[in-house]
Image (cartoon, rainbow, N blue to C red; front, side, top):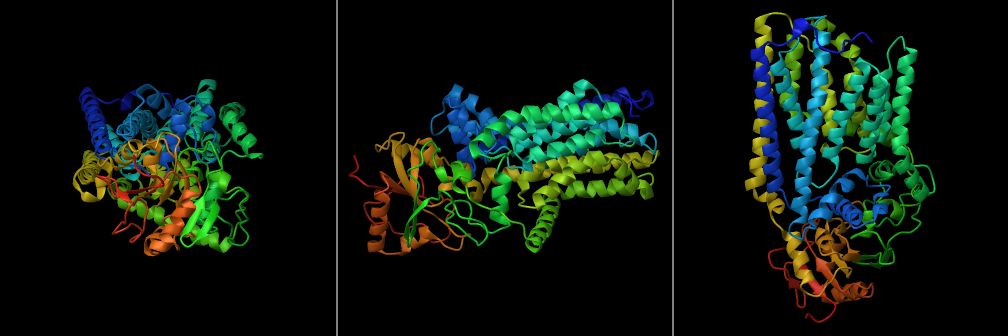
Length: 588
């Protein structure tokens, strides 16, 4: 390696620049954390379809059941982080979700610290590289661009309001990038161990990090000619990565009876590429995708009623606590034309996500490229610093093969833009450097405006009211006060993935009339309310035989018409919510 350990003396910033940079960093840190706190507060009751499963696992760990972390679909890192807070504070129904959002703020602060390390290393590479081809981007502008990138990636692309691990993944993207660049700059045994540890930690945060670990090791080690020392140290980093990951892989493989590092990619491929019914109640098909070994039990055809009471120790809502159990027997298969169609569509979607969320950064990168000292050399320079942007690019391609959501891309977006910004060396004249400074601060102002706009919408707009409404806690409180004790069995009419109220009341869902089935083409909940009194009584009788003590109908995830306009007795509306309850016994 020819890169030096520290910047050359001739490129050291003067004292005024240093003070200004420190002020910028302190100001950005304070502003970003303040915005994160405000947004977490105004979305304190927001949750997603995956949140109940993560909270179930976190609570099980907090209550002394660490085996709950061994799940082939949900990675253990995030619920393990949640568990000590759940154990220490033991929040009631009204405070568990705000507590989870407080943990998200702490993760955000940790991600910001990780980014600080990563961007410092990127800055060092940029300065050392630019001295050979021109001038470096002014330090203030470089940090302004960095904080703009971080703000967009972690507060807009990744929604802070949801209880999920994607912000934690962004932290390990930054830490892995930092460790990889440090190793590539000056390989050593300590840096090899650090790189392997960061990659394994990323895998524990989310399974897609496992294949990306090999990409990071390649980016850290590959150069031509390849030295024997670098090769051995790279092998050490890879060995540490695999050894630290091995306990979880072994536990998963033992549970599944086959070698696996996680089945989320396998199931998502079947869901999104092969057209298998997702995300629950798969009864088999389409042709060629296999048959479930232990499906949920379909008890009625119209409206569709499903039961899953026999399976124990699967959290609040068993079909989504461990989807790999219910989809055992699935056989995803590759079809070239179908795969190509989805791959292209997902690439277009990823580009749209970048344009919609990071248009200001995209424009800033393009302007810096135009200001570059030798635009004809830009592609060559971009290829020479391939190791900076390749992990992000490979991650984008990996997600495009199966399924893309904006929250998947936040951390990888940081790595992708870091490479684009790092190669932009400038001519050594004052006007160009001042222009670059203006570009950096314009990007920062644009990002700040986007964050403030989003925060104001979450605080004021009616469409974000659910994040400020403790509706799930009110449902849980009502049910608990009406003799549904922890461990009681209930049925639902609606989307079982959103039964956060059941988690809060420690109830077990054993049957449901789902909101949607068969790729959202059938709507059993709507069928129930439109079927008439006699058919409704027949369906309720089926639900009663499952052992459910009550049926709760709620609007989350429902299509229009799937909730009642007029509810006959003995259905009761739960005050302050849109939920209704039907008890199979006289109310106390």
